[in-house]
Length: 255
Ligand SMILES: Nc1ncnc2c1ncn2[C@@H]1O[C@H](COP(=O)(O)OP(=O)(O)OP(=O)(O)O)[C@@H](O)[C@H]1O
Image 1 (cartoon, rainbow, N blue to C red):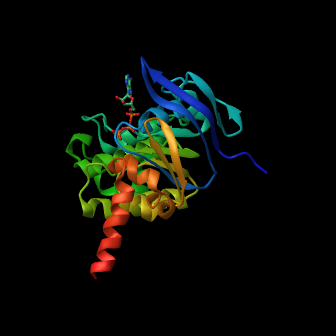
Image 2: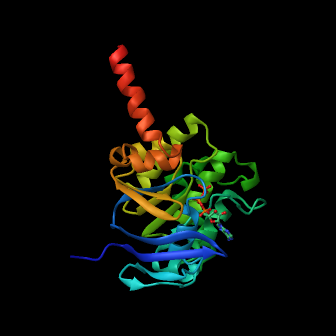
């Protein structure tokens, strides 16, 4: 059987005395659309940085596309097909949307003309075709999120790591963005997303990993993890699962 596209084995990373990520092992299957969730400060972004080479793990290994890439620079990982987006979106404000997307295309394409033409195709995929000539600074928050997605997609990833692409969007913008993410996965790109918007996790993800205080505490389908006591407690505090069950039982008796 072919090795999964991404395999983490016992990954740990501390910052001073803080164990941000502790002994995380997981495998991402090629072609899947999955999510990494967990409370604030759980270590999700750190784990993305460890996968993609922005940080080096203290211990553990990262394998991607059949190769050991532990500690390898992000640029080399992008060439191999792993690209991440960032929570804080920073486009080149004075440049047009087309030029910003072309920056991503240039990973594999030297010709300026070809990169700009390819940018138009990528913009189409994320719903930015009408904004191509605008400076990036003119985009709304939702537009900037789409641009961040487009720049990543322009590098032609096999694995796309999305760090909260829905954060800061209103419910309508979230509803409009979800099919874009689905479309990218349907187009053959393996997607792993960090996401706090549970509606998106429930609707999009086939598989979910839950991180709390640097450790994986659960994994499974969205329905499985959201009904897991450990997960409820990680989000809402110790004893919550029991309290919720008690409240639900009392409600049934009173009904
Ligand atoms: N470069 C760093 N130096 C020191 N501490 C860091 C660094 N990066 C992250 N941390 C700490 O590591 C822990 C995990 O942070 P991380 O950003 O990975 O969490 P997260 O799950 O992505 O949180 P959020 O959902 O709020 O974005 C936090 O306590 C954070 O303060």
